[in-house]
Amino acid sequence: MTEANEAIRRYVQQHGARPWSAAERAELQRLYAAWLGAVRNGMDRAA
Image 1: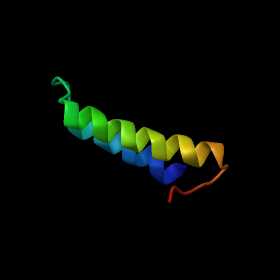
Image 2: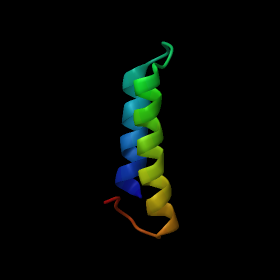
Image 3: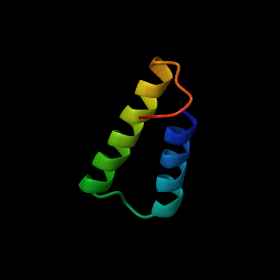
Image 4: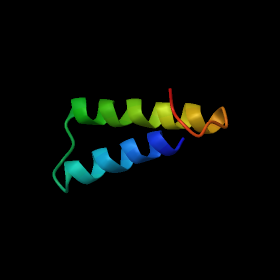
């Protein structure tokens, strides 16, 4: 979960304040799904 959380945080920080493209939103959704899976499984690290 910690790794997935950091991946999301890093991705959003690198993106900045500009509008999100469809591909960027899809990548953010993929990262969120990995984080949510880790949370639901009670894991400390995402697969």
